[in-house]
Image (cartoon, rainbow, N blue to C red; front, top):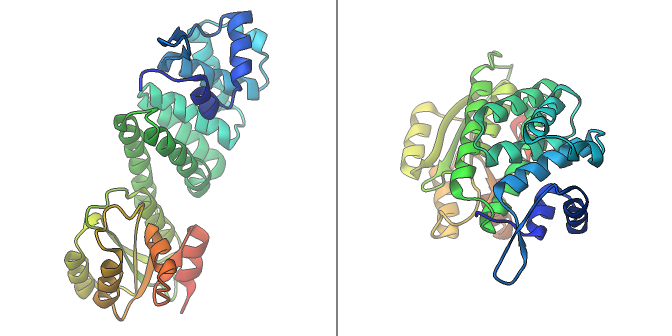
Amino acid sequence: MEYYTLNDLERLTGIKPDTIRIWEKRYGLTIPGRTSTNRRRYSDEDLRKLLNISVLLKSGYRISQIAEMSVNDLDSNTANVLLTKTKNDDFILLLLSAMTKFDEVAVNEILLKAVIMFGVEKTFSDIVFPFLDRVGMMWHTGMINIGSEHFISNIFRRRLIAAFDNLNEPPVDGSKKVMLFLPEKELHELGLLYYAYITRKEGHRVLYLGQSTPLLAATESARVWDPDIIITGVLSVLPIADPDLFLKELRNAFQSKRIIVAGALADMAEKRKQYHLNICRNESDLRKLLKVK
């Protein structure tokens, strides 16, 4: 989307429309265009500027100080916020700003700072996934294009894979063999990668098959590797033509295994009272299920 309304800006930056209007009149911080019906419309540059302003205000700057900054100074001072203690929502605003510019260097700097401050798990659970929820809302309402989502999701994916590969802990006593896969046509794998990271960090052995895995291929892999636990899920039910049939086939394919389902699959299993399937809503649920004898 090329233009944003005042309501769009409020949802993305947290700044009230009346406040934006006052800043326009008093400081000329933004100069909106107009629609054919004379409604204000704002560009990507306006959005980035207001995102930066929001971060600086939360960091103690006064709006009168910010109004005197050039565009370069505004970017520079916002980047310096990374050198000080930053709240989760500030990281989300910074990621939004970097995403709109397709600025890979900035995204990686923000992630690195978050990991240093909070660790990998809190970075993903408290910053990355809430951020992606907001991006999903933006995409569904036409506020960003799919390219922006793919750009930043792939950076998150690479970061998570690197964190997974850097885990060198030996298997713990009583460790389990855990196989993870996404059903055919399901491509959103960031959540499953995160579960694979937690599983390995807990000291279990992991076989990660990844996205869009045909059930037959997963069954054959399980026959050879003989896992104790199967983890699968979908972000939404769209990739699955017949949810009831899929859950039945899943149960039949892994009759002797503990099956953990997440995302929309967990919703479907719960709704259909599929008690033989283990419901997983978050990393806390996952850790508990991994400990079950």
